Length: 378
Image (cartoon, rainbow, N blue to C red; front, side, top):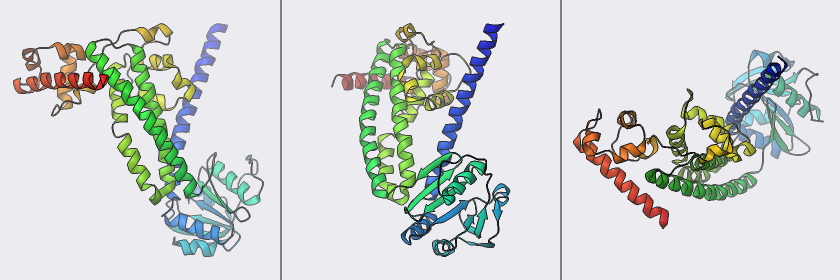
């Protein structure tokens, strides 16, 4: 009974950790929207910059829920269209400014905010302490501008973020792109090796897990760059173009690899991929963790198991081959090797495939194999 109780506790703990990781991912996506709202080129950022240049302080709440309004005391209702000039003029008064949730209207000015004093705060100044408590209590975006330090600080839930100078963000983004190029090269090499092994029928779990690991590393750099792009606003156009060009097919390739090799359970490839996204770097570096999620077990020996791709990834590369036909092929032959070895007559017997398409599939796979072998040894 005692062992069962311990196991239940462990399972509960694991479940709580998974929920916490999922919550962290959602918060990250939510905060990306916040960065876009205050990015250079937006009216709100223009207003914030005007306040900063005038060496003034400000406390601005972006939200008009009843929970927010219950914390508001005093001041006066304006309910007018938002303009950077209006925000600047109203910031000359000491009180907080309340904007609508889409930051398109100014609702109240010169108000006092009264959050729960029991909420912990690491800030020392009254303005920033109030901002942090309101954000924690309501989950709303609160912006505090320090008059003395000339710094814009964003609070949303438990997140605290200081807006940085555009030159600093651009420098970080450029460094991240250089890192992305290197990781993308490693991913492409691992993927090419996997493709060659698939045609040779020599794939092991290790080869699959390594591709998944490299692909997820690339996507992590992309997610970091998305934060930079969001914060750069109109200044991040070139960075965005570079990222899109570099990783145009990475996510799709990663999904198809998972789809080819995952076994057991009812999890979809996208759900498994999302699981990898919630892991820490240490968890991702351990290939046995990836092996476990894919359904091959967590033992080190499982990495040496021979596995056989279903064929989704390579069949998707063939021109004019609809997805329903690909599914019929995989359902009929079971895996890629059987499809490669099948005769034109056998391919012709599959629903949705005539003789012309059968020849196209046969020739397409042969050309793809020749190209992969050529690229591998160049």
